Amino acid sequence: METVTSQRQEKSSKRHGGLRKLFSLEKSPLLYLLPMILFMLIMIGYPISRVIYLSFTQNILTRPDLGVEFIGLSNYWTLMTSAEFWNTVARTVGWTSLSVGGKVLIGFGIALLLSKPIGFKKVYMFLLMVPWVTPMVVAAVSFRWMFDGQFGTVNYLLLTVGIIQENIIWLGQAATAFIATAIADMWLGLPFMILVFMAGLQAIPEEVKEAARMDGANGMQLLGKVILPMMKPVVLVAVTLSTIWTFNSFGVIWPMTRGGPLESTRTLVVDAYVRSFGAFDLGMGGAVAVVIFIFLMIFTYMYKRLLMKQGEM
Image (cartoon, rainbow, N blue to C red; front, side, top):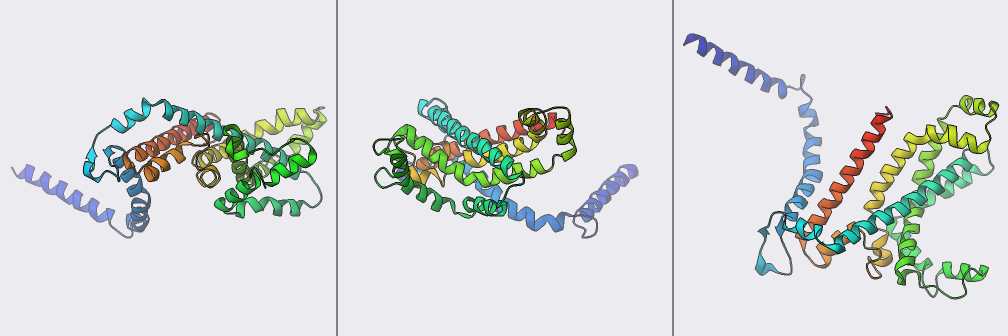
């Protein structure tokens, strides 16, 4: 009996010692991290958990008579069995691929040019910052004017050089609206790509490039067999971050087309907004938002695995 009592006292002493250590100013970082933990829980944890909860409910603001009812996976089942939803997924993937692909190709080309000793480099660098400091909505509205079917500068320039013979209603047709919104998003994302690629190019040792030239490599061989392989981790990071931002791009599409015409620019994030604040169906809107979250988590995990295979993490 005395042995059991002694063991209990020992366990109690250890437990109290652990708690004292946990909340000790000298031995535990918990108290120092507590404000940040609370901030993260309030600003990030609560909104995410709230959206996840809403996705499992029937919550239509225009039908208060139905109330808020927990319906499990019903919203997700409705999405997964909807051809319209899968069309939106395909459209989002296509739009994101077009925009990110354009940013990578154009950004890498400009970074290559700026990495060489050319005149007025500071002027070019200053001009490249213009898209970055331009608010997204302002840029989107400007592009909407530029692509205007009657008075837009795009039609004016193309008519002037003879590429087109009559005005094109860029934002009034499905295919052209899809491309026009992607071009606006490319313009906004180019500065980030160029700066990241320039940093990567400057990190390549000149000795490596000089050795390749001495072995007889021409410009294309130097690019394909030396520069691009060494730039692979940089390109992966840039593409991943840009893909996540572009996938969630709402500030470009909504001011330009509001998801139209004929839903040709209705990506997943626009779909979530329309369902939540157009149809006031918070349950379905929350389900779409959670699907976006899952897609991006899977994409980020795949990117991490890809980098780990290369020994970069």
